[in-house]
Length: 346
Image 1 (tube, one colour):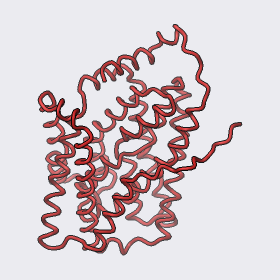
Image 2 (cartoon, one colour):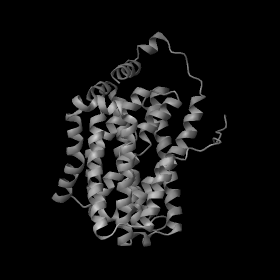
Image 3 (tube, one colour):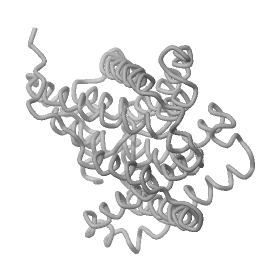
Image 4 (spheres, helix red, strand yellow):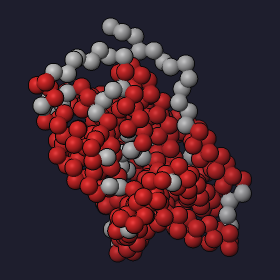
């Protein structure tokens, strides 16, 4: 058996450093009084703008073409919104030995958010997997998450996420769904501009999320929620998340094999079905949790960095796997045809 070599340089995401720096600023200089009102209003506007951009970026034609590879996408969606939440619910048995209740609520929320797009595509490409399928799978997951994640959070987290009250439903619709639909509607006019200025708008995206994090952690500091967390609890959370990630990576890889998917599709399923989106989860937590959003997003921030580090190792290992020659018969197989269609549509 080949040894799994740990890379010399681990992929420490620079953005995680910025997020941690923002948390530090919020801890030292939390927004209070009028400043808190301004930060809260700016955070609300930033969340709406984020989901407007998500809608403007998603190609409806690409999504419809990608439906032809429906088995793969259903598998990824099932991992993201069924298997992950079930494992999150099962982790309730770890309270109070490894987790306390607030951290458990945050961990459960982490299991409810959609999959990533950028890192799923990047790791699938490095591992020589089905990149078009990873693009579509990530897009479908993000689209479904706008509706599914808040509903799951309201149903499974109860009062800690605002319950199923009419106020929470209106807040979700106004801050998440309406801006997204507006972005989709205006895509025909602004889609080209968004594509040409992808890098600049990406910086706006990330800056908006930093603002959301500052507002959430400031409110948490003022409310004193961080007094509930101890180093021992954080260590327990890291252990639980490491096990959760290992289970999902194994399940997506071997489960996809059992379902009859080929190597390239299995790679796309593994990377798209085992990860959680920090960019989508942070704004949603701010909407759903209010003053307790800081604790709710902590497990997601830790899981995000962990998944990047582990998946980088796996992708590098998969890139060295021998790939069988593609025959004419293989090219005619459904998965190849569907992948080609998705590539042309992108």
